[in-house]
Image (cartoon, rainbow, N blue to C red; front, side):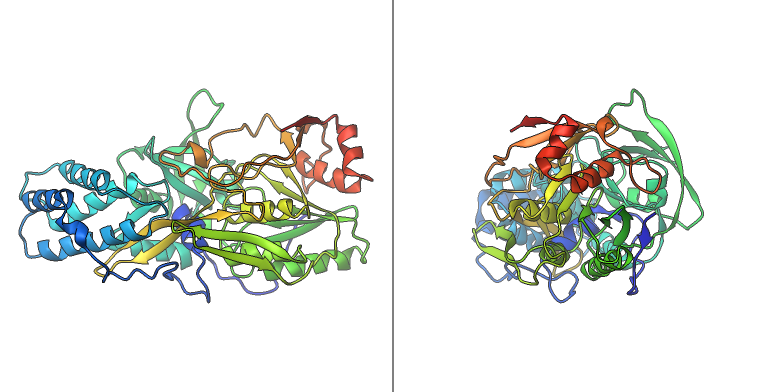
Length: 498
């Protein structure tokens, strides 16, 4: 069975992990552990504001004054909007156009059901910014002051919940499961990547703000929540009752199958690379140094800290670029391997699936590009964008997509994901929705993957794992125990494809 390997204390991080907390803020390229670090451009609001004199902006000012009540906060809230608007125009990953942004802001305010001239300015500002951010991409959003505080609680707090990474499906306006966290209530209840949560305790998600829905999912440990789930391939919705718990994030677990070491990385948090090194050393000790290969399992790993994804990649590489981050101006910040190969060249198989996103895609793609590992499983989620959480001068914050990730070969992760070298076809894991299927998803502009891939049926794989039910893992172990990749593919009746 898997050993829980956490020799260093790891703080209790989250219970219901909203995707903006783990998959976005933590992948901003922040250094020194500084939360909410402002990266890339520093957000200096002293630059020219000539656009404020354009007809579009003047139209917004007029609409704002007509819609809002003059309760003494109008001027400050308008400055708040202007501050946020500056940053969107200056730092969004793609250049924006004033016309569509302003039109969205005005439409957002007009949807407020109240008599013009009576709407509180703070409500109008939030509606305008929410509407603008919805036109950008699935991961950009405005956080009002309460949501901003809640995001920091989600990232650093200890509270009861389910153990799932989620975001708001902007098409259906319901909660989408990015990935269940291993060994949590949601994981044990059978929730899967791509599931849609349409109701909480019988109340529809449609019409709820994202953070309101998140609060409904969180709660005291040992309390129940009833979810209505829609799943690809299921003819009708079904109910799942889950008992909340405190989620202790254990980023690395390890096991052995014969002389093969298995290392499962579930999250990229601050201790992941150290826990990985400890796990590899423990495997060597258990097998008395007779290790024939390592399986690095990144399935259902939704991401985490950029620097940890770099450190985990670096643990298996001698040298070379791991990933680069490019903003809209073309400025690139690259990360290089320099630690040496922790596994000393041992054969390596990396497992991924649709629940593998962001940081886990960086690791899988880097090891694949350097031909250090054979990647096996199903195509990953395809989230290769960088979100910067930037506190605004007045209050609240913007969560803004500011850059994209690129793999060493020049391939983009965004919208494409990482294709495995050997795809495992499974009836229980259909090729469902990914990043590219989300409304307003950014299209990556990197090179296409030109590799020759192979595919095989999961039913041909032997079972492995603690419960002897994991056939994908079984195929990975079998590959490492074979004399060559070609021998394995021939035995399994694999098919070739581009």
